[in-house]
Length: 162
Image (cartoon, rainbow, N blue to C red; front, side, top):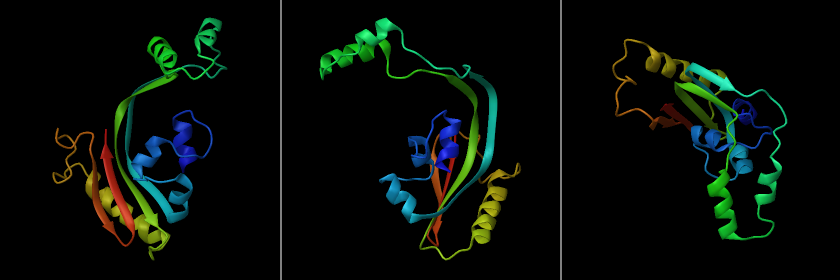
């Protein structure tokens, strides 16, 4: 599943990104996190209002930028380079929001796949029904927060909205 998240971020490989680790509450070495995890799942609303992306091409740094990169370890020179050129290249922008439930099941959990799927569906139905006031996400207090709803049977349920 980390590869799916990486593709959304235009990253290659299976090593989890910080976003992936945050969504499923992973905190350790990715190999250990993967070894301790039986299943991952998520359900939610993903709303994209606007998307912009540069065409896929080989991005090449201009010669004057390449020459500015310090050739030896020099913290002051690195700081000047970062201040002048930054640390990231923006290749796309998405505007919108999401309200998602993430589930991480540990190997020690005895629940079967269909039972976890039913728990996710039931929680999603309860959270995302339009008439629900208990899980109203329009409130300023809930925006941008991650809440742990349930941690039982070695399954961690996390909900986030942005």
